[in-house]
Image (cartoon, rainbow, N blue to C red; front, side, top):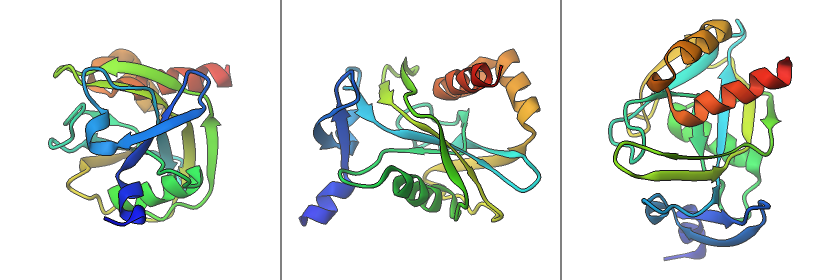
Length: 179
């Protein structure tokens, strides 16, 4: 196996200060005792100002079938974070994204899904725009919808159990920034 191939399957482990402390295989990182590692989330907006939300494929290891933000992923070792977001936008949604900015650079969360699998991530949150239409990868996304941001915030407030825990927390933090 080449170094390039191996790096595609690695996630970056970080300490509590966000400093890299090692790497581990992506397919083994999420367990009942997941170490803190680097990830990212992204919210993609269209020209009408609607945000793209996605429903995770049923084959996903954590929170299968749950509605969440536009896309998530893990940067590879030595990969530029913005390039990682663009790569995952292509892989998950077949989307080229235009403007990209980080809106929550130090977002961190830990959550346990119904199967006992833990997410434990330092997860910068990005905002992106696109003029393209999604072509979801069925291994990643089972449904998607463009929704009004205010309606999404109300839905998450009224029924947080219907959404991924990271999206619920991220939206709260983004709202607090705008207050």
